[in-house]
Amino acid sequence: MATNDKLIEVKNLKKYYHKGKIKALDGVTVDINRGDVMVVIGPSGSGKSTFLRSLNLLEVPTEGSIIFEGVDITQKKVKNAEGKLVKLDIDKHRQSMGMVFQHFNLFPHKTVLENLTLAPVQVKKIPQEEAEAKAMQLLERVGLADRAGTYPIQLSGGQKQRVAIVRALCMEPDVMLFDEPTSALDPEMVGEVLDVMKELAHEGMTMVVVTHEMGFAREVGNRVLFMADGKLLEEGTPEQIFGNPRHPRLQDFLAKVL
Amino acid sequence: MSGLIKNLGKMWGYRVAFGQGVLYTIMLSAFTVLFGFILALFLALLRRSKVGVLRGIATAYVEFIRGTPMLVQLFIVFYGIFSRNALGQFLPSTTILGYIDLSRFIPGIIALSLNSGAYLSETIRAGIASIDYGQTEAARSLGMTQSQTMKMIVLPQAIKNILPAIANEFVTIIKESSVCAYIGMYEIMYATQIIQGATFIIIEPLIIASILYFCLTFPTSKVIGYFERRMSRGDKR
Image (cartoon, rainbow over all chains, first blue to last red; front, side, top):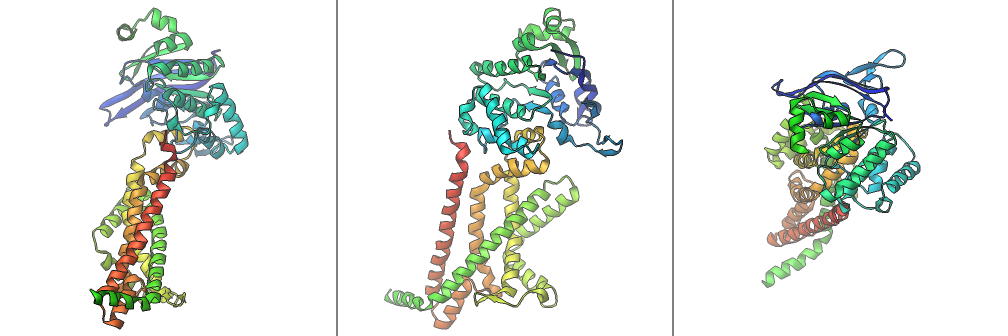
């Protein structure tokens, strides 16, 4: 499914805190192609979440650029179709980047269906009925159609995360970013969420997944990145990364987690 | 004892005066709640502004209002800002319902709102801060703008969290509005003073006044409690 059609180009991305004393990201360069299922692994504090959150500018990088669908979204101003410099509309670009969080972040004051239709209706200006039909169809696919009218607190963790995935999908994004989507789940619920992600991957959705689920990385990913200390230390296919790790930090990490 | 009951009985003759006072207090408090809340929302957002100067102005305002007596603020607004040779000349000299003099009513509402807004803004600010930042991140990641996120995601949850505190503030306004008697606004305390003057009875009008205030504040907290329960639908399993 993977292509050579670049969707996101990350160039020399840096994120410093406390005037450079803490380097959360220290020069990461990588291309994400359409159809890629890129899994980012690494020890905690390695910068993998910061990397992911930088892709849709939830973290504003200190340096470097992120070129998404041909536009450098780290710039304040960009050239529009007529070649004029205009203010970059980050909200517009975020519509095409779905994000799934470790702690789900569903809106607790809205029902499941309202969670799903809010952004399509308010942001994309899709008619309510159309947004609801689309949401119900997606809910059906993750097996939660019967929960449309309930509030998030009435759902289990696994159900919440599946709703959160559907919420992102309702915007019809070009890429899905997953920030440790199963880390806050009880073990018996991890499977149901990974299954939904697997299905998405098989449909050809471009995905960037930060996870500790090595099984998922091996089975579903087509590329695996290993990060440590804010640097991208090794990149390869799952076979290369898990079968023949070269960097001593990666060998050390795998020895601990596998 | 029999004197007390006899005097309380006499108060029935002044029921219209008390009634007018109650209606005045209700209108005064209702408008204050409305304008105070709008001001508070505005102040709370200013205090979260990225612009340091705006933050500074809002903070200074809130601190100043909270650090000075309500009565002083009322006098400054009424005798200063709305004196005859300042803004007072623009006030309409009409009365509504035959006894509510707008040239006093409007400065009263403004003074109370300026005060209440400062207190409420602190409450709202705390309410906004109590909402997990993940909510904002989720909304922004869906492409919602900062103001959409505030309006549809953060504020509804924040207001729900601070409803008990807002109810307290509403009750406080009803009670604090009694200082408006000092500038001749015909609310409960003013009616009480008139009746005291007319009858030379001191204690009994005050007893009636306190009962009337209680009859306003107690249902107010009950009504807010009802809305609180209704809005907590999302919290129940």
